Length: 337
Image 1 (cartoon, rainbow, N blue to C red):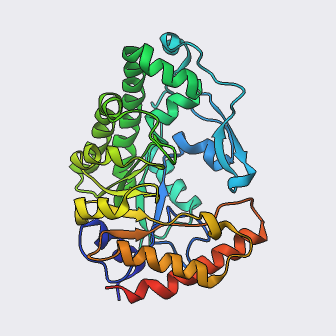
Image 2: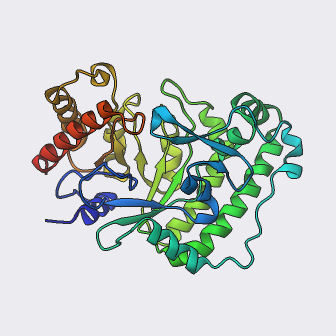
């Protein structure tokens, strides 16, 4: 039987896996044993994440949120950019001269206790251009800037992309990733934040530049985009994206699977909603919902499970629900293919 890593990569190549893969992003506790995959981000970019908060490389203050297991969000009372036309005075990329990329990569791997023999490496750079703009300005000002000063926003995005692509070119040669990873949350549960036309105009050219680094290395490319973002998938597939997560159930996942087949792996398809959120939810209810999603999304391959309960660290109710979910997935994943 294939290892979890090889089974996951087989699915990303468009082949039918031996059993249902689990995509974890390397999050601890999602699976028993070593994860099939783990995200690695250059420490020069992700230091604030490693610290659990504080200022990022651009000066944005991040704070943990208790209700989501200490996930980080920008401090909403102190945005750093009020006027998009003044971004050149505020946003300054750090100097990369003298960076020891080999040492940084080695320490990143060691810090994550990463064993490449059993875990695939997905190299990520940042949380996304749209999200970064919102972290600089807040949603109201950020969205208004895209509408009122599109050329300034595009100039800022190109500046960010130049920096990130420079980091990628240096770091990737040492990281040697198995998967090229991109991220940008451009949608809420019910609707995207911007139109497909704006997405295509502002963001796709940047994603394409980053994706080219993965394409040139012959790597599968994943894209993280929460919410109802199905209207963006055509453009992402065109630039080489082969896996989309977390593929939330507000999207027409059955229709997406039918349209793209194994060209686009659906990683997700599981959301804790309605009775699944109850403190009294039973194992049978979790198992039944998970089986229904597997029945719908696994045929012919092109699917990785990704799902978990989020809550405060140490909340025993969340721990219990995740234990039941992991048990259900472990019991089900070998019953397909």
